[in-house]
Image (cartoon, rainbow, N blue to C red):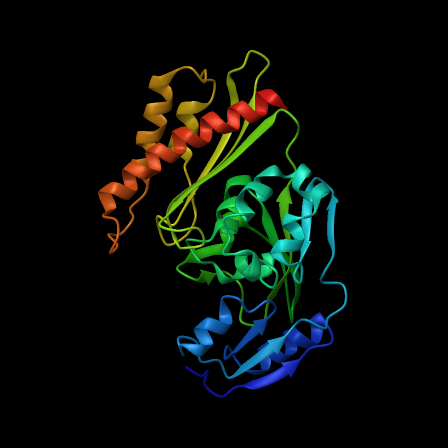
Length: 291
């Protein structure tokens, strides 16, 4: 299929891009990697009046570790981050999740910030941002603001971004050596939409118990979900306490309301959530102990 007609705006600065977006009164879309947007255009599921190209804007391809966060500019490709040893060492959960994002060919063009702004509830990077309590920096005609993951995702492909705003940076918190991480996902084939995914980051206490844990699930609701009840059951638990792990898995399953799909009923996907929580906690703990 072919996309509908649209204007094309080549932006030379963030300010110019924001003004261009505002001039179309909600009818324009920013373009960076285009790995999610272009298929929607071709299927005419998206019919914008204009595309505002960000790719020639200087300063948006920066990738740094500073001020306690991995800071990822709007034009940093997913594959670039995946291969950035310093950034992945500072935030290992990113490295574990990125291998599940599409395929290498799409990661070569797809951007990290674009994935977050797209807000696919089955997206791996939104789940990571939610798990770690990260944030994005958005810029619009009224200036810049930082938006937490909890405030960013509003539903299926919906965010709290204004029509004139673009995500200029994502911030993933750095975790210390006593933290372990795991990212577990089940899909029919690698690169397919996941039936369920769980991101886990936990801190191992000196006695081997779980001092602190963060869990988020994706592909199971209209946005990534932080699994607060499961976290509460695991705090202070020993990794050998099968009862605590099972209870946490059951709490996670109870917290999600996945729809039935052609390949998996909701009951199976809830069960899968419980299994992935237990698996992720065990693997994250093992990595935290080994660190």
